[in-house]
Image (cartoon, rainbow, N blue to C red; front, side, top):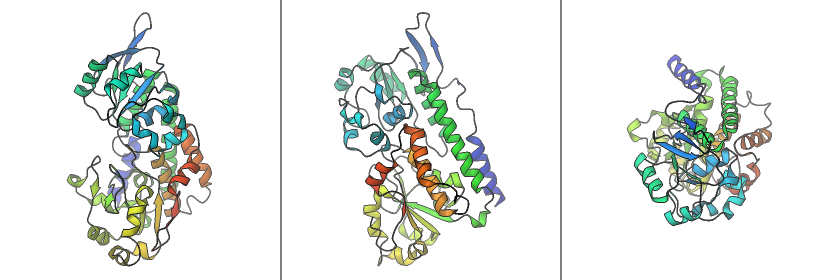
Length: 372
């Protein structure tokens, strides 16, 4: 028990790192004498000259457009990847006008001709290599800034370094610092509210139906699920061998393994509820084999992945899971107000009501039927 708590505390100390000190690997910049451009070093180590004043941008590949909205830069977006128009994502609910922007082509890279016709001053690109970024910049003649999307578990520093880099290009440094400090403060509060709970009192939990390139069944999970780490509960899937864990293509277990684990509480990603409800309803082997289903300890969480991780949903999920699992420690929290606070911190607007309409919202799922 001491070893687990020690690792948990070390992990929490990691989030205290001063990520907004300019580093040699990301965010370095210098302006020329006339102030017409600045030289920045992107997340692949490339040095690029970008205009000192940015009026039009494009975010390509998973998470890039989301990051622009985090920095209150939606008004600068010149074009969007075409499938963004029909997606249900918090940032598109906060800024529906983005769906009216010209198309930049398909997901994960767009279309060269459409990108050039949108006349962006700079292109931000995630999930790319140095060579791919160089090639796109060569073919378009537009500066391409490569970013790392990171995650909220083991690579939070990469995400915030990328956000800081984007902010340096856009002149949004104060906004990036504000968001970082909010996330840091929220995670500290979650830790403080749960730090006196003994290891034995921390429930064994599982999250199923995690989306990877689309909705998935109950066997799809996330061993490093950040909301569980934020509140120190025992994710039964953490026992999986690292060789079986794939953050891009997904991590999948056998249903028999889930029954062997028999978690105290089962959480379901609401994006996949239409699939998972058939797998865990009355009369199925899982219903017979999982005590959490028989005891009604099943709860819905907002989508974790949707063209990369929804960081605002992840933090909201942590607060909801904490409220479910540790009601005494969170009985003073007005949950609806907390949700508004989270979405406003990330997106500048409270969008939970719109998300609730789309996904049904946070709730305990009815044992055996799992209808909305």
